[in-house]
Length: 169
Image (tube, rainbow, N blue to C red; front, side, top):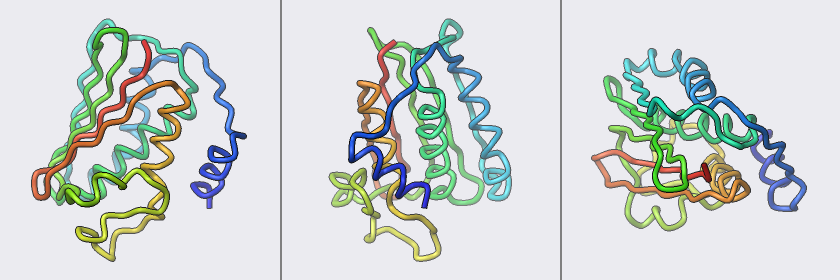
């Protein structure tokens, strides 16, 4: 229900960012800690690599957390037992780039074009046992856009997925 409410606020233009200088590494590690039980249950290793000089970013801390939790939980959910999730944070030009890569089952080429649209799931590659509304990536995309950032999703079936979020530095 919260995802539906968030999407409704975003689409109606009533979602307002409360930007401030936030400690990006602190948010990244808190999201990892929040999802550590899910990762441990599937014996998935979660590796974090943050460039040393990245400290703060001008962003809405709750929105940034929601972006990272949605992306990391998807990586954990769709990665088989014993897999790996890697989150890298680095500078690229005038942007901070957050990249989440997993060794999951990947997204079909047909679904890649629409996977970040509301209520879309990769039905060609979806297990009916995986719970979700199909709103996680659309919320991520909308929140990234509200931050004037870019979202890129690359995937290949059987080879995992890499989702890259580029936010203004």
